[in-house]
Length: 202
Image (cartoon, rainbow, N blue to C red):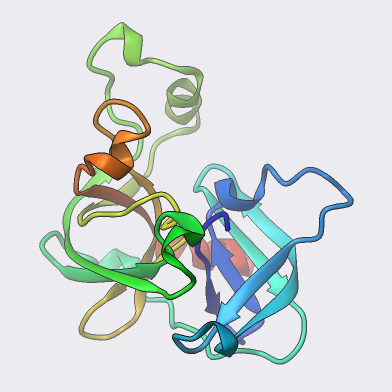
């Protein structure tokens, strides 16, 4: 289990993060997604999938699945999102360690902030930050909500409309990566849904 994804558009496309799928480089490896419509594992099915679009800049990927379409989530116009808006996201935190039942976390959009924040000191400057600054920053959603490894690719939805406003892509970690599990910061970030719409429409 590498992360979370969700069905969009006509029901045969899966949205997730680029970092969930782009390091699968073995040509012999078949990409399979587990799609569930209920809480029991017997209600979930495995489907072959193929990556059809990737944006490393926005950390988004779109996969196409074979077979019958599934019910899809509606993507909102994320330009209308405001700070203080109540949201929730559903995913599979900590991979398969908690089983394959989806888990929903609730929170708020606490800030709409540039993805590349200024470094506090020289030790925080790395190649990823430099690439982001060179390519130009864009705004993402900072969430007052606890996310864990495995939540990458989770849909962030408005609790009133149910429409997807963003895609969880990272958490703020205090200290080591292990701290994401033992001492979660309660701060997560999401890519606005409009970037996903743009990627699908390419």
